[in-house]
Length: 209
Image 1 (cartoon, rainbow, N blue to C red):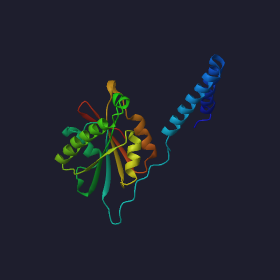
Image 2: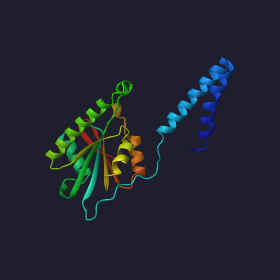
Image 3: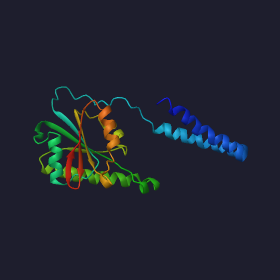
Image 4: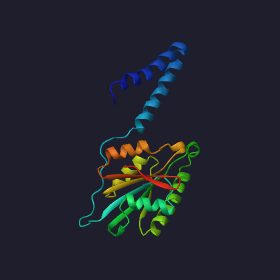
């Protein structure tokens, strides 16, 4: 944490409590303190270590390439599959073991309704379409649904999967925005395996290294 952030955090916690005591008395102050404690615990629980992300070791004698394709966008168009195969060097996939991972993205309404299954169903549908499209291009792959947090999903999967390469397949957001930019930057910094990226936009695929 940057040194200048600590005083701001302390002030953000202390000022509302002091104000509550001054304006509303002891009861309001205690309530404000309890609320601040809940917020601190919630924020701390969401923090995760930012150390290197390593992959599981391949079994002895396994000399194949192990490619983790992280799909955070629909992959069903032949042009998109061709670009993914090109960026991942999977045109000849005979020597490659491919695993496709789809984060279970939870939308605002699903989160409000605590409907995690809806997000998992959408991720599974995304996987079915991606696996079918890859199979048509001669790329056999297995599939997994991961955590809603893209980086956490990759980190979890690499505990058991010996990826030598990780390829993130993203979709462009509205007005040319890049929803996965922050996650891609973190993966690029933390992954010990090779990292590549493909951004799919309006039926076309663009490589971002």
